[in-house]
Length: 177
Image (cartoon, rainbow, N blue to C red):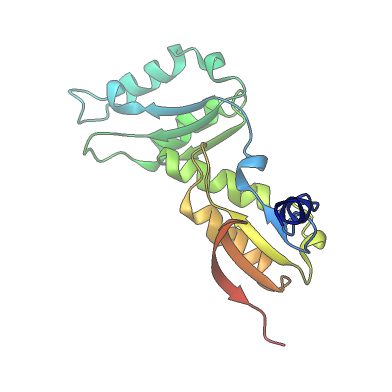
């Protein structure tokens, strides 16, 4: 009897997930490498509250912008000051020749813009009529908005959309037949 049980246990283990039609989309796989920088203009304000145009322009002119080469930069002001739009634009104009991407806002907005642009260039043909798992665990800073952008791309074409890992998913969408 014991021998019979052992022979049964020797059966080949079949990975049903690997053999299924399930397609996995991992936003972390398309995350572009590069330094993320939060550029704060507060230090260029008089008493960290007032923008004096002449002084601000001198600070912009004397700054070493080359240090942002191949970086992703979010330009913002961390103090509660009224900053005219042209000031942010002036800083962005100086960083743009060096940086991979520049936004006016915080790091979350930066990551949001990066993912919005990246998802426009993805070929989604492999996901047509397929059940799709959007991978949930990530070590990189993936904003929640990136998941919404991905849903917008997948929902019209996928048979179903799940979130998580193959062993533990949360259903999000199922196409009507």
